Length: 158
Image 1 (cartoon, rainbow, N blue to C red):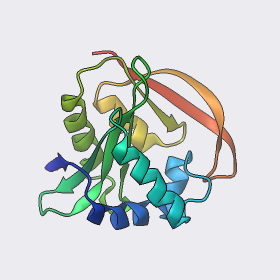
Image 2 (image 1 turned 180 degrees about the vertical axis):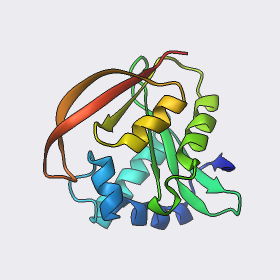
Image 3 (image 1 turned 90 degrees about the vertical axis):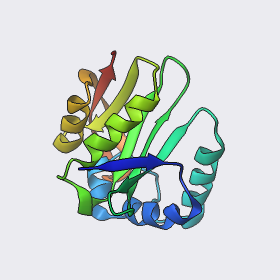
Image 4 (image 1 turned 135 degrees about the vertical axis):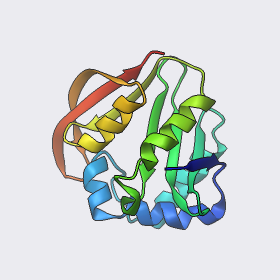
């Protein structure tokens, strides 16, 4: 699937918010905000992200120009991590893989890290297609599931 990345605009936030409260998206992401439906916290979070020079965040656009989700790299040097959220209506079409590949082309730092719920096979597959390898695991409290779950840690060295 053809996607492009661009800077996040104010008009993207309602789409991101809708994605962030989708029950299936929340379950798959697992490690989410404590109260995803809190719009004030959502907007404060995005204001911080967009103002932080250490965060590279991009909206993902489809070929028709619609916003499909977002991708980002964040964290201190040596611990930089990738994250992404693609709207559920676009899952299974190669959007996340294409968007993550585009993002990795913008970021020369290595290693980069990623995390996924151990049962989020789709996200683990996306990361693998982009060169990430599983390097560990841990347990953590997943707000979206209300319990501790297994998490997979992945690394991209090249």
